[in-house]
Length: 369
Image 1 (cartoon, rainbow, N blue to C red):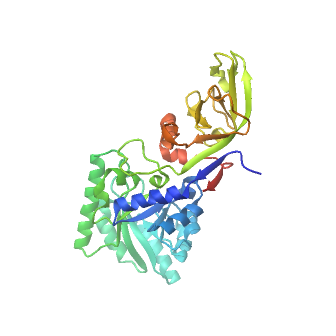
Image 2: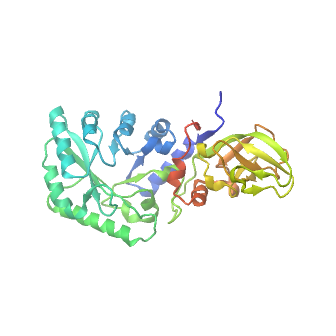
Image 3: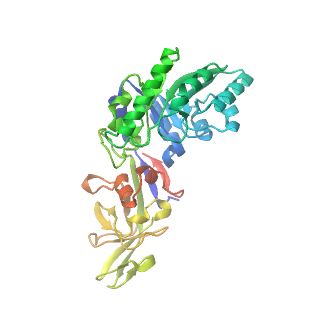
């Protein structure tokens, strides 16, 4: 039985996006960030495609995500915090671990000694994110102590931006300056790293300094999907890899004055043909589309009437009198000026494109094409 709602993920476009990013930041290596099951899109096919395309590594948020990718043949790195109970498996499986403080460094070292292995780690420095990492002002002493611990291979050092979507952000430039100063201080003590990275997707678009020496890697997630933050420059030439589709489940001729959906927020101004689309907010359609958005049926925009519900969305078929039950409906995607983008939905919802991509429901079938 086919799913009523499905999300098509175009792997060819994914490869093209990756190639454009890789070319733009060359000679830096590109770490593909595949957190949260590749932002809910299905990590296995995406990871396999990106590994074949030349990704330098994968970045994830936690151990279970890392273990799913350990057979990909390229380095897998936990970019954030690690829990004490996760360390034994991470060391055993060769996952690159973030060192965010002295205690974690000691725990990883002790476990590596216990397993008679060398654990690969990278230092995460907090230059202004305020979430995780070694405070920049304390980093020199902490890093000097950590590199003296046994059975640790500190292959890299990195930081993260909270405001790189703002072109010319002084805050971001100050973070870069702090990080470069730290690298110089460490170098004067004989501490250098093979992997140095600070650029995320936003920085790749807005701050070229972040993929120039001494930086030799970048991290990208949302740009792989062909999406951007709504602010800042969009210098990369990318295309969306996503198309969310469903079908018309019913067509009705309703009289003028009929109230539509919960809350009766819309009344038909005249006799109208309406269509019932078999997808709602449980499938990822934002409630903010209510009375504002549209879907595409046979290439024509059909505006949402009334409130989007959990399982269904009601649309006008005034422009499409030939519509039939079972017709394919594009909720997100399409071609040309009428294409509905992730950014369109994010702006309507007043949120970030990441949230849109992560919001497709569990009954939405993910199909790689």
